[in-house]
Image 1 (tube, chains in turn orange, green):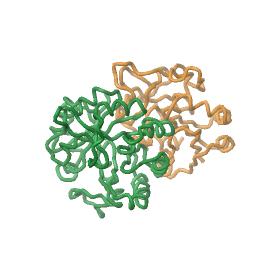
Image 2 (cartoon, helix red, strand yellow; image 1 turned 135 degrees about the vertical axis):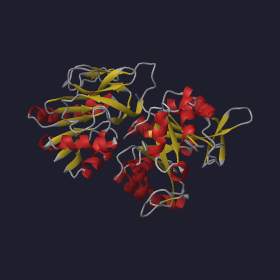
Image 3 (cartoon, one colour; image 1 turned 180 degrees about the vertical axis):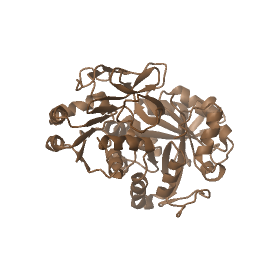
Image 4 (tube, chains in turn purple, brown; image 1 turned 45 degrees about the vertical axis):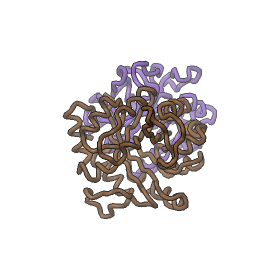
Amino acid sequence: MIAIVDYGAGNLVSVKKALDWLGQDCAITSDPGAVAKAAKIVLPGVGHFASTEALARSGLQDAIAGAIARGVPFLGICVGMQWMFESSQESPETPGLGLFQGECERFPARVKSPHVGWNQLEVAESSRLFREVSPSPFVYFTHSFRAPVGETTTACCEYGGSFSAAVERDHLFGVQFHPEKSGEIGLKLLGNFCAL
Amino acid sequence: MLTKRIIACLDVDNGRVVKGIQFLNLQDAGDPAALAKAHSESGADEIVLLDISAAHQRRATLLDTVRRAAAQLFIPFTVGGGIRTLEEAAAVFSAGADKISINSAALADPSLITRIAARFGSQAVVVAIDAKRRADGHWEAFTHGGRTPSDRDAVEWAREAESRGAGEILLTSMNRDGTASGFDCELTRAVADAVRIPVIASGGAGGAQHFVEVFGEGHADAALAASIFHYGYSRIADLKQELGSQGIPVRWPC
């Protein structure tokens, strides 16, 4: 079973719908016990970085960290990906999980923010998440903060400078865009994650 | 590069799409779910479903329509028309909408924008503004499907909507709507330059050149049309190809 973690932020229906479409056994849950037992974990997230504090308070963070330590595949989407970094300028006092190095930052003032719409990626060949996807796909974004480009970056995007659209290391995956809203390409990515 | 979005709008009355749909080879051409999927497959970047039903019919059919359309739609999906409360918005989100669009209710009580944004995020709140040009060269926002003047300046209202938490502005020129004579680039630019959130231009699309103009001189981030996709271009793909050849960044091939 794939656990879609519900920590009270945003709308999880679309992620569930996409996984249902792919024929996956999945459930939206806010129960740390269910998350601890899941075969895979998806952490969606739209909203403010501070909303991830609910993960620590509810025991979900411990359940997620424990599962990750046991090698359970994990996918963070949007704020869910940002939470995998160390911190975000959006809420400096809220710690991230620190699975990836760096701080999420604001877009520069010369571009409109939030970054909303379809933008093109440059994908690293080594990416497992983007297996059998074109090297420069269009995907749907909606966000005001972005993660820096680093060694774990597997897809870059350009908007007021380059940022990490996707990161991966071992069984850990993060995407800044919304695969559940990115048409066929997004479904393919989710399918690749489910097939791990 | 961030692309310019082409948004297909479905006007739905009592569960049926009411504008023409001659081009699509569909079993049931009036079914919003079938049409939304067809538009998505032909290259639409986003779908807006606007419910224009009379109030007494709305409750019964809208959520069912949204649920059926959303089930097979994996691009952004916005639903508007008659949403007056946080609870009504929540029901539309649960049915599968990614964003809701509010107009009259937001003007009547602007705190509604903030309340929906606080619960579902600003990215989920589109404020629709129906604007009509006044003799003095400014634009006035209208409510209730363009029937009621609000006495609010459209540009100033867009700014307030942004400050209250709107994630996007859906801006319709009442003067151009249904004319196929081109978007109102002056109006679109006035609003797009006044806010930092994306502005979707609507009203007046008649051909590819109109999209080129509104993305260029109009500074629009996205453009919405209904009937052109039914009568003018057989496929949104053809429009996108034409825009691409004129140097407009679009998502193509999808």
